[in-house]
Length: 361
Image (cartoon, rainbow, N blue to C red; front, top):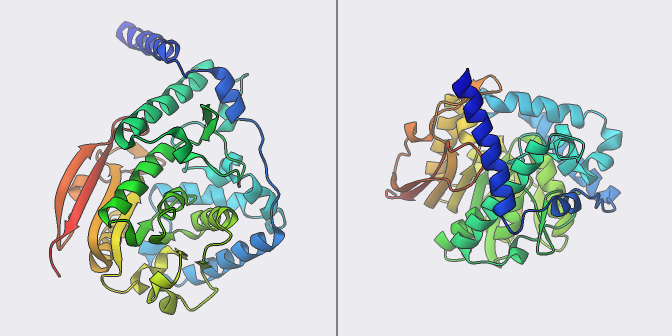
């Protein structure tokens, strides 16, 4: 009991020590990051993404069990279904989805706005600032980029932390790094496919390269957010949503589009060797073994270059699911080029980054 109290006291001391020795640490920068910055919502866009979502939910019923929400995502999707239950309020939900607890659950690396208000736990606020600035320092060291590179568009009413006049959203440093590493693997042109693209951040950064075509394969409830966000911030790009065209035809002609946002059960429709790089972060280990194997088999079939992923490598238990260690899975026709500890603050040290290369035709 005494040793536990000593460890807790040491953790508190270290947390505040880290905060006060970091020149960029400031509760004022956090308060600015929490300011409401809601933007006008296009009813036409809401109608478009809602139509795609409804089509995906309709067709999801006939998809195999491995393509239904499972593992940790059972609980997370149930929360999102609550958020999307009233279709009449979809514009309001999407216009501020970053701050909607049910809509954004599972997509933030750290605490969300309700836990970061000044009246709440000082420790949570301090840990949030420390984590953001830790990842900022890691990101600048790995990429050599300036903070402007991760400037976040304000669609969806994002929150985060202000660094040198730029709003940084939780997880955006990790997403930018993954996007740029993936694009570098494909020499800045070709098809980048992602299973589990969250709100579309990796795709946003990857699409800055004019030769990149992005495919996001995800559960319908997550895809709804990505569809709204990417279509909002990239209105001039050629983005196709589910149900707007024949899915098989679209996936047979990926390079005719800037981005394709389709539900996960469309993955078997992707042609063989149609992606140069496949990416997944923070989701494979959170699924049941049969879904993991199905996804890995489809990635092995469709990827002609590299598979880059970052996932839990410990049997960590949360939300009624014990995460499957990423090292326990294998990729037929691929060889492991590298495995490294994730440098990011999220996950308590259980995440590892893996890079696989295609070796067999």
